[in-house]
Amino acid sequence: MEDLRIGVIGLGLRASLARAAHRPGAGAAVTALCDTDPAVLKHQAGVFDAAYVTEDHRRLLERDDLDAVILMTPDDTHERIAIDCLEAGKAVYVEKPLAITVEGCDAILRAARRTGTRLYVGHNMRHMGVVRLMREAIRRGDIGEPKTVWVRHFVSYGGDYYFKDWHADRTRTTGLLLQKAAHDLDVIHWLAGGYTSRVSAFGDLMVYGGLPRREPGTPRPEGWLREYDWPPTARRDLHHVVDVEDVSVMNMRLDNGVIAAYQQCHFTPDYVRNYTVIGTEGRLENFGDGPGDTVKVWNTGPTGYRGDADVTYRVPDAQGGHGGADTEIITEFLRFVREGGATDTSPVAARMSVAAGYQATMSLRDGGTPYDVPALDPELAAYFEAGQTRES
Image (tube, rainbow, N blue to C red; front, side, top):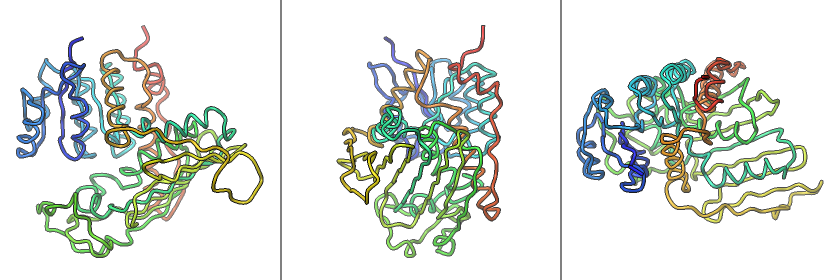
C-alpha cells in the first residue's frame, strides 16, 4: 500500500495532528507544508522533512502530487481555504469549528457536494474514550431514554489561551460559545441523538475586559504556553482586541425533545468538564477525573445521594493528545480519504454544533432572547447522510 501524500495548511498549536498523520511507510506521509509565518514554516519543514514548503496555500493546492490536506488555520479563514481545497479536488480535514457562521458552514457543505470532494471535520472528542464509553452506556439502555444533558466546562487557562491572541476577537471567532464550545455541543448532540433547534443564552466579559492589553502587532509574551498567570486578575499582555465573553450559560431544546444546558467559565482555578445525562431510567455522569477517569451510572432508587453509584465504568487508558483521540481521528480521516464510507465524525453534525453556538451567541448578545437554529438544506443533509456520494 502506497502512502497517501498529505499537505498541511497551518502549523500552529495543533501541529500535533500533522505529526499524527506523518506515518512514512505505514500509510501516509506529510509531504507539503504551508504557513504564513516563515519561522514556523522553516522549523516544521525540518520536523517533517517535507519536500515542498510555501507561505501561500493556493500554491500548495496547485500541486498534483497531494491526496489530501489537513487545514488548521485560524477559524475565520476556514470557509475560504476549505472551499479552495474542495474546488482543487483535495480531500480536506478541517479542524473544528467548521466555520464561524452558519452561512460559512453551509457554503463549505455546498462546495463539497458541488465538487464531489471528500470533506472531514475534526471533532476529535467523538474519539475520546470517555465520550465513547458514555455513548455506549446510553445506547445499551443503562439509563433508559435520554431526556436531559448538562455540561459544565471549567477552563483554568482560558485567560492565557483564549484572551492573549485572536480568539479574543469576535470577528475571528464569533465567540467562545462557538469556538470553544463546538466540541461539547457536538458531544451533547451525539449523546442525546438529536440536534439543537432552539437556544437561549446569557454571558458577559466579567474579568478580562479591563485587564492590560498589548499594542496591535505585538507578539504574545515568551513562555505563555508554559507560565500561566494566577489569579486571573493578575494576567497581563492580553490581545489588543478583547470582546468575547469569558463566562456564559446556554440552554437548548433539541429536535427530539431533549433539553440540554451548557456552561463555560474562563477564570476557574482548575480545568475540567463535567457531563451529566439523565434518562427515563437513570443518570449517567462523568466528573472529568483525569487518570483513572470513570463514568458512573445510577439506575436504581429512589435514594439519597450514593457516591459509589450502581455501575462504575473505568475509562480505558490511552496514549497521545486528547486521551488518544488525536491519533484515532487522524486514522479515521486517512481511511476515509483512501476508502470513503461512514465515519464517526460528520460534516452535518459539525455544522449543527456551529449553528447552535452561533445562535446562542446571538441570544447572549440580545439579552437572552430565544433564537431558533436554522435547519440545513434537506438536499445537503441527504448528500452527507449517503456518505458524500451522488446518486447514480
